Length: 110
View 1: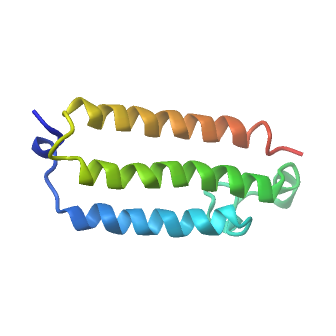
View 2: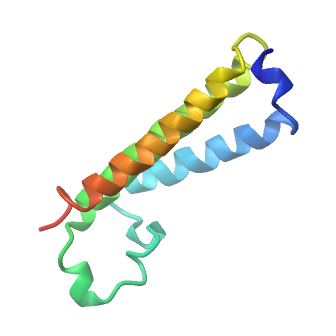
View 3: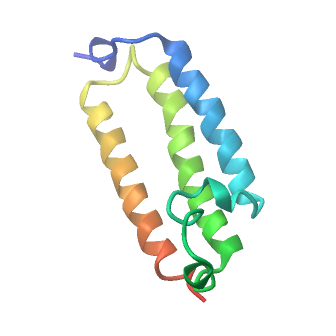
């Protein structure tokens, strides 16, 4: 059983999500776009003062970029890769999110 048996939607959706994620990641990696970070954009000034905004943007942009570059491999290799790789990709995405949360709450604080 390959990943192709697990796919139910068209490939163009994955490519559109890839482009969106890379664009948002580029904005975050440049140190801008803090208003795109959920929770941070609605936080009070007192809470925002506790964080280094540029570091926070770069940490989340890097994590998002890692997830973004995983998507094309899932589309390009769906005919060749075994089905368990889809679960490995999911595990990587979850681990990446956990690492981003930990880094945002440790090295990004002033």
